[in-house]
Length: 403
Image (cartoon, rainbow, N blue to C red):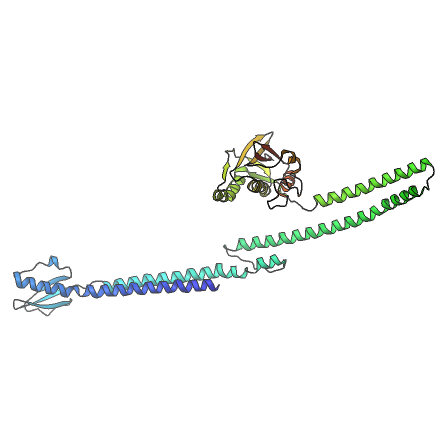
């Protein structure tokens, strides 16, 4: 707010200085123009004295020359000159500099009022609403989801505040989901821990009995061993459930299935990455494609493409990234290819797993979730994703159903 106020003061000050300078220049020109008729009258007197006649075509400010009885009778501006002992009345016309100054100053006044109006409008509709939202991102970052977000009907900030409210609701919803997930996991672990105790106790009792030689009969020892094996199977099943809960339920995905044009998604991707890759010197190629309608969640599909391109930027050699297209069995195939692949082919089956990072990711920051997220999202949209390595190029292909 203070910076905007200083900007307004500086702009008004500069405008007033320029307006004052313009007025000073016009006043000086007016004085010069008003003195011109005297110079022309003196030249006219010299001409009459020398030639006895005159030609007014060379005197733009003089409108007439008179002599005789009505020498001093005139309603026009005039000056009396003498030539060869005769008095002459020389009438002249003053320039319209005063009217011009009035017009120019009126125009400057209108511009000044418009300038003040624009600044006032910006302050009321942009600066002040933005000032009310200044602390909202900080409060959201601190976890204060109850921070009030004032509603704005302004066309400049109405959509922005609506989006911030959506962001807050999304953060709050994600927090509630995370808390619910953590609670469910804790209950699951407590339940499984309790369930594991029963077969574990049976295993310990049977093991002790066998160790102490309580079972002298071979049949009883076999029965005890089978009991131990059965209880171990139960524990193994419980451990599998824990592993599954830990590996799959740490993220939740929501997909709103609909229809979208392929061109809309590719345009979004191009506008997002073309400038960035151009600056870095990476050749970014989007092959020609036939526009079609895809059965998908447009935002989620764009997210999958972004993940693939981000991977290409991270793990490629920065020379070329290419998006190509194909159709097969009622599906659109969108392939992202990057040069400089250092991933080993034997790792391809594991790259779509959660937290998996290849042997080429040692010095690259990441969490191993990009391709896992792609896999889950494409599965929810009824599609698929797979990867291939050819000629030191890594290719990841999204299989999207046509609408």
